[in-house]
Length: 122
Ligand SMILES: [Cu+2]
Picture 1 (cartoon, rainbow, N blue to C red):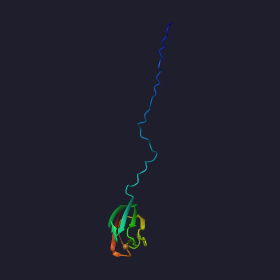
Picture 2: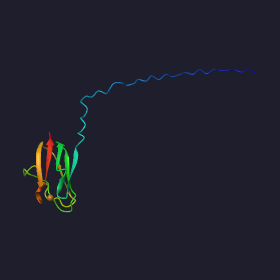
Picture 3: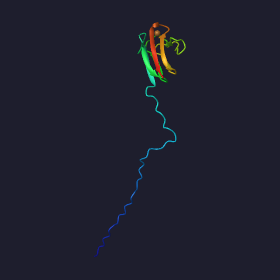
Picture 4: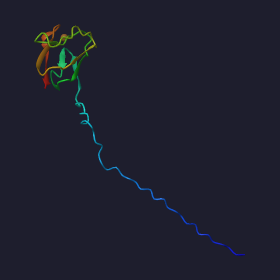
C-alpha cells in the first residue's frame, strides 16, 4: 500500500504591525493638572488654632474644624475677608482662598488670645 505523504505547506500570514510611536497631536495644549495642595484643614482645639499659622496657594479650600465641644468663630481681623459666624462645638467652617495676602484672624468669642494667621500665596 502506497502512502502518500502530503506535506502541508504552512502559509504564514505576516501581520505587519504598524507601531504608533508618535505622540498624539493636540489641537490645543493638554490641560494643566490642578495644583496638588488644594485642601487643608486647621483644627480648633483647647481654644487654639492648630497650626496657628498656615500658608496656602490661592484657590485652596481651607476647613477649620472645631474639636472643642463649645463654639468658636474664624473671623479675619480686617473685618471683611472672612467670618464664619458661630461654629458650634464639633462643627466646621469652609473657606476658599480667593485673594493673596496675609490674613490674621481670631475667634470673636475668645478674643485675640485665640488667633491665627492665614498666608495666601498668589
Ligand atoms: Cu473661640
